[in-house]
Length: 108
Image (cartoon, rainbow, N blue to C red; front, side, top):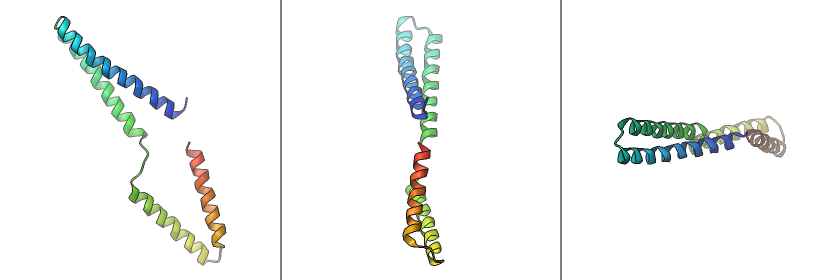
């Protein structure tokens, strides 16, 4: 099972538990005013919300734009150093592009 599929399943289960917990709280408080059932349903909703927040936080991999720009500047400086040392600029830039493509394929 891929990570994106697992995350999607976890999110769906959490949403169902959250909505079901809220509905259960309402039904339990109206039906027989059973405080234990209301607290249990509320606890289930709370845990589902916390898990949903935790999963969403962990799988977020987008970095701030400032870090991307800083990394781009470091790569550009490295390319300039290699070219100044005598390497062919076109070859170096092609190599960097291929490395980026390889990294993107391996990330998926």
